[in-house]
Length: 230
Image (cartoon, rainbow, N blue to C red; front, side, top):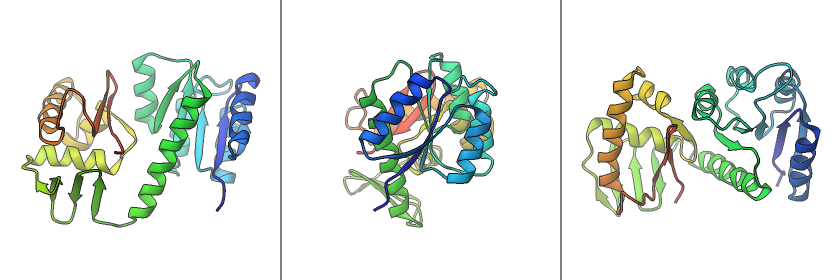
């Protein structure tokens, strides 16, 4: 089985060496790029399985790198940045990043994020064109337009069902408020975000045994929501 290949985009040589050494120690292949321009070229040339991307690059902002890669590829991009404001996270995730890790970070957390990303990738490949999504006791039959929990059909409103399907099709990935509202309502106004919170609360009551300690849908405060792999 081929080892996953990871592109490390980081201009700080100490951080780049730390990540590279960690990857090598755990059996990953990797390429490195110190600039945004080099990152785009490496991504196009080597088609990595995952990109680890710093936002503060010397020649261009990392968000622009995300947009360039997203114009032709859906390869997973995990941002690793010292920028910790919600607005920075939202901008990167809205541009197409799959996850966001804030510096300083532990190598254990980085490896955990990579494992989650690869599980999501392998799950997508295994599902292929399957019309059924299964996650623990939660099942969605896309062809029938129905969802089930513990074998019992869930009585969802059309909006709740659309929300559940959107999260399921992006399981493991943080979806921002703006992304979700655009997908569901076609716009992203403040009242859309308020509506989203209401619908998400009612959806949780139907699929979570304990909505205060959710098993399936995780809230990223100020950012959005993620469907967890059970």
